[in-house]
Length: 158
Image (cartoon, rainbow, N blue to C red):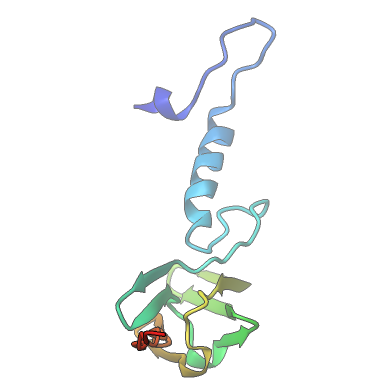
């Protein structure tokens, strides 16, 4: 229902109601911002890849959605226990229809960076990364837990 998207101000007759087009622009800007595409020229260009982090008995796994990127556009670094995923999306599209006499060209560029602090039991030297079908998968093995040494102490009589 339209009234749930657009709040009309009726409290005071001198207060202007919210312009329908401004409110719809705000709603759509918020929706598209999550996809890394600016909906209008005033919207900040934010690229934040979606990430899933899971844990198994032996490793942590991070999966980041990076559709449309090539492997060369992605950088993964690990410094002082902080894993950083960075890159740049460069996209250009061109459409031309000589019959109808128009040409449409779009280009988009944006840099992204996300960082995760690794837990203390993460084995930083064993981290591996693979990129396939627009999904970057990072496997972070866990260090084996040091089991306490159990000794039997002989009890002597004095």
